[in-house]
Image (cartoon, rainbow over all chains, first blue to last red; front, side, top):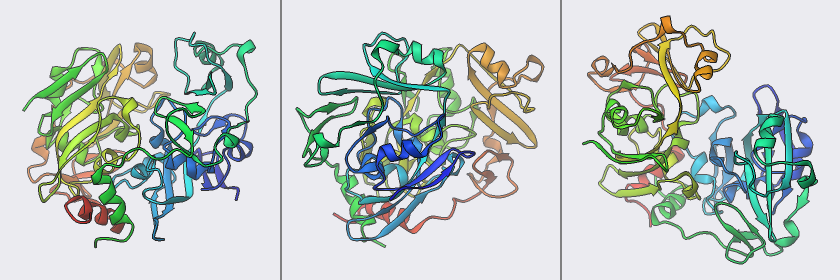
Length: 218
Length: 218
């Protein structure tokens, strides 16, 4: 399933959960960016959101404006909206982000888009005075992705010799699924990502919340 | 109760729920700012977080790094942490922000602080090309508060003639409590705030979540 809606004026995009990340990039105009780097990861947009994003150095949940998810027992829950201004309270979007499937699966996701004049993916040697928007380690290499004003890219440490082609496909690294675990091929600020890895330990209060949304309670 | 901890290096502050907003300002060094304007509102920091912030034009929940809250039946829940990097998933902080007391009361709040070289509160005439971080209407006046580089303040529409003294106390406007309702004395991008006002309509899924955290379920 493809990108379902692209609104350039209000700067958001709606995609089905299984939309591949690179398909989102392909659907976007040149100077508008989603909250993830131009690489492919298991599970598409839904998987990304369930894992709480990838490689970001900012608060990723803020860029998930809304979503529809299905709880393990099949309850369908619609949360959030399509514009930033609609974040008014009673927030069921943010607990879903990074819930590692405990609350269910994302059927549809509304992502915030951000405008920028330039973007680049490069081998990251930490020379910049500005932290790139995305930083990760892939099989030993450190990589960065950033967008902004061309001068901002330089401040972030980008240089032409270090630049890489966007569109790296990491899915073959995770035949058993992408989860949290030591010794995996990818690593970001939050986690080491391993093939067949699991989810982080579940706090009891969050387990209660999951059970309630899945059909328990009033 | 006062500010409990101030960490300038990691840029966060811990305050008890009842800490007045202006007491937070008084505890901070000159160039470090909390995610609210220098005005007093009912309920202190806890009330602010329960109502989802005040007057912000950014995603306020991202600046609440952690909290301890007590559910209506007295369950104590600790959520989040003290640094941005700790936002890893299973997020119980963000559903609390803007939950209007449905999940309980905030006992302790960890707020992100941001550094800036200059700040100002002024009568807002919408002349700037940059939206101030906080914009609101108070009894007919439009006001703005912003921090950043001095040039950024000018771009936001600040001018010396329009500048106001920080520290306005709005609590006398809300003898019956601050809530959402028409015809009240304050208004921001999200809501009109009225004396004795209530909370927005509660979505059924969020009501389930509240019931679960309050002691139901596993």
